[in-house]
Length: 141
Image (cartoon, rainbow, N blue to C red):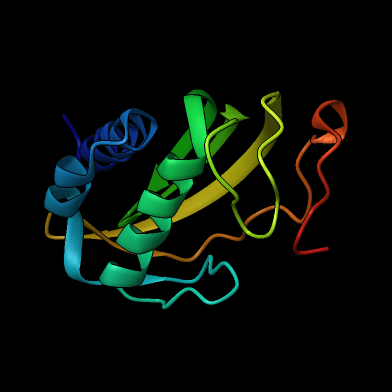
């Protein structure tokens, strides 16, 4: 398997662990000096900030599913386009009250890998998700 294919496989495992809420698996796959540029309001850009945001997300959402639409790797970078579906039914998240309905969004994420670990997430989160069905508003808009 080429390095590019290994990197893509690592990012796929990372996304799978994310959907399952597997914090321990994420800790293994993320570099200790991980830097996140996809910050939510109030989130720190380091590993602990990412893991805290992850924990808050999974406290608020259930039934999270990712479908990878396309994945491209070059050198130490992997770009993944995927659809996320999740139900906001557990707790308030980013000022939004849970309404119990599914939302869907198309996401583009970039990951930089170093030494077999995800060292950086420099991609940008979308400004809006398809939340019309749930009646929710985008807290970042």
